[in-house]
Image (cartoon, rainbow, N blue to C red):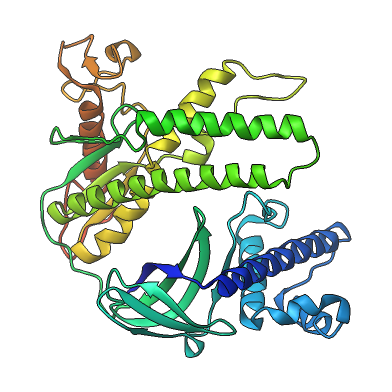
Length: 405
């Protein structure tokens, strides 16, 4: 199977400067090629990767575009391939531009023949990249397979390299362990049908206060300097915010990874809600003609949802399930938090608070998130044919009901 290995790079000063140039070149190629594709669509025409790659090769010969020739050619070609894949998957008009300030610098080396990695010592390794030469990186874990490609990216002011590795491990067979339902919440990040409640504070009170001060300082610099958005003081503030946010993201990623591995290691079926997080966290501002309602409350809910890492947790579940023989089943999330697990009565009034569920019909009481997790598990068992997890799994449908004659 294909897995990812991420390491912290130790660029020299000249290598870090060159990496910034390569990232800027890839960003310019992406934006230019995207604008070209949109212009073609306006005229009812179409342009593909082959034609854009040919035009880019011609542009390298132009003295005005000599900066293109300074970057590794494979990284620029891979940028065009990524753009074509994004346009095919989402549509030319929905693909986003790459911003100098909001988009982290990133570029990929797709040819494994040009990537040579070796271990230098217990803590350090070395990789040779085209036009970079030997680059040292922190050896925190073994590669565990054959390198397929490598991506260099900047995160929180630091540079990282991510190897896509073929580990040669086949997908594990079903483990036959008991099933479990998982509810992702705002107050509690992960609640399970067996009564487990797992949560963690990803940002301390001091960090939250410091982040607020930094954001206020950044906002004041925009108001004071007006169009002068490239001042050194502003860039320093942005760097501090980026490093602090990166620290928070790493804690969240560590939590969801550990919890996901624990769940799939001990259970054969993991039922989760098929949530559309992008739609759930959409802005409520509306338009000038139809302004939104409760905008501030909705913004706070969006931040709370995104801070719990719902999408990252599901991604880690699906990845770890391949190695532990678990099956991830996404169920319809409708009414799972309003349904009584004991009597199946649906009523919004049963959800007394964020943590308490008391059925208005039968009086059954439970933690609200645990009750929802039990309903999710029941829906997952129904979809998979009442828990048949054998190698010859039955069709994902309920048995037909018997009709009296």
